[in-house]
Length: 132
Image 1 (cartoon, helix red, strand yellow):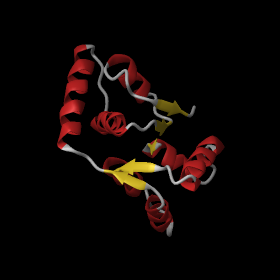
Image 2: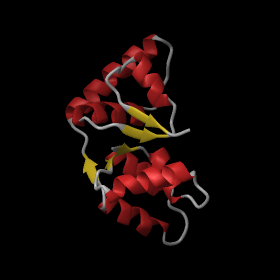
Image 3: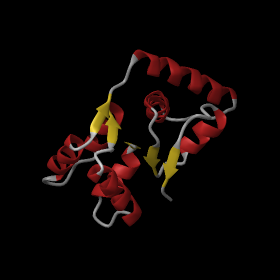
């Protein structure tokens, strides 16, 4: 399961959504939690409380990192062009995560509705588990 930054943030946030805490915890226990460099960047950039960075680093060490490849940039560009032709603007990081998850065959665990837009309008093979 490729865990999006929106799910990680809820997992670490005091008072975060319990479903996100449970789902991320389950994936960590099963050793099936994954992240990518852009996710690490987003989550680590939000570490502002003392000790928070260490907690994030520990959780990421329990996960595996799916690295970016040149083909991901190309596929994200193609998806972005499809979306822009339809008048849809999506964050580059979300497009990269979508193509990475397809390449490695992982579902994305997220709270972000943009992944549904990506799937409906550009990448129908994208698998999503969205927590509302």
